Length: 108
Image 1: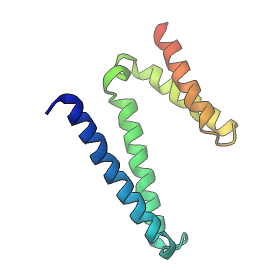
Image 2 (image 1 turned 90 degrees about the vertical axis):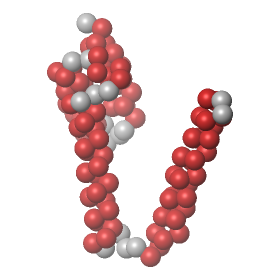
Image 3 (image 1 turned 90 degrees about the horizontal axis):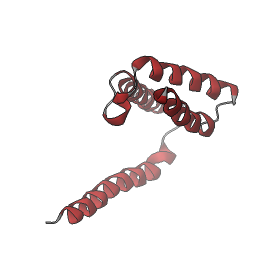
C-alpha cells in the first residue's frame, strides 16, 4: 500500500471511531441527568484528562514546542489565563494571542 493510501485509511478509521462514539453519546444523552453523579464524574474525568495533557504539553513538550524554554511557556500560560479571565472566558482571544506571544518571546 502506498503511503497516501495509508494516510487516507487512517483518516477514515479515526473519523469512524470519533463519529460512532459521538453518535452513541447523542443517543444516550437524554437518559442522563446533568445533575446526576455519573454526569459529574464524567465531567471531572474529562477536565482532569485535559489538565493532565496541558500540563504535560507545557512541562514536557514534544516537537517544535520543545525548542522554547520552560520559563517562556509558563509566562505565556499565565498571561493567557489572565486574558481568558478578563475577556469573560472567551477562548478565541487567548488562543490566538498565545501563539503570537510565544513566537515573539522565542525570537528574542
